Length: 246
Image (cartoon, rainbow, N blue to C red; front, side, top):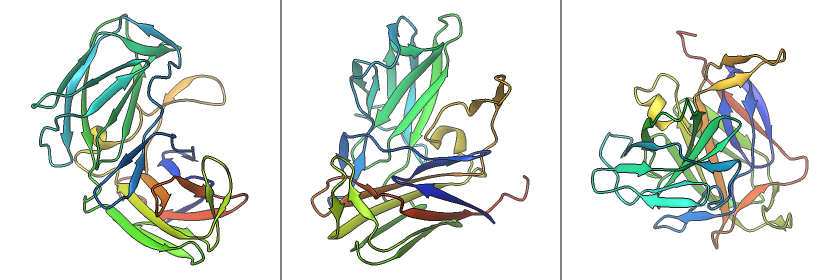
C-alpha cells in the first residue's frame, strides 16, 4: 500500500507524487443538498485564443450527457442532447489550453493539454455521478474522526479538524462529505480523470509523462452547503492500492 499525507482541502491526484489543491468557490448542489464545488468560471488564466476544442461528454457508463456546462476563460456553453460541444476560442496559457466541465449532480472535471499549432482538438470527457459505485458519501459530526473507503482507496480524517474555506473560521457542526475514487485500471480512466494529459516537468526542467496510481476527489460542506476544508495543520491520511501491473 502507498500512504501519503494531504493537507487542507483534499483534491489529490495520485501520480508519481500526490498533490493537493483547494476546491473552487463556485458550487454545484445535488438533490440531497451535498455540494460539489466547481472551479471559478469566467477567469482567464492566460489569454483567449482562436484554438478550437470540440468533443462529447458522457456519464461513467458512456451515456451522452446534455446540459453540461463547458467553459474556458470567459466563454461558457452547454453540451447538446448528444453530449456534443464545440468551442471556437479557449483560454491558452503557456501553450496549453484549459477547459472546465460541470453538471449538477456530477463531479466536475478540468482538462488541459498542449495547443498544437492552432489545430482543432477533440476531447472525450466523462463525468462521474454522485451516485457512482466508486463514491463514498457520509454525513457526520465534525467532532468525530472519520474514514472513507471506495474501491481500495482509504482516507482518514481526524476529529475536530474543519474550517470554512471562505473565511477560515472553525466549524463544529454536521459535515456532508463525498469521496470519489478513480482506479488507474478503470476502462474509462482517460475519460474520467479530473486532470490533464499527465504531463509534468522534472527537476531538470524537461517535460515528462507522469504515471497515475489513481485519483480521488473529496468534497466537504456544512449542513447549509457551504464549503469546508481541513483547518490549520490538520492532516488527512490516504492509502491506496498499487496496481499489480505497476
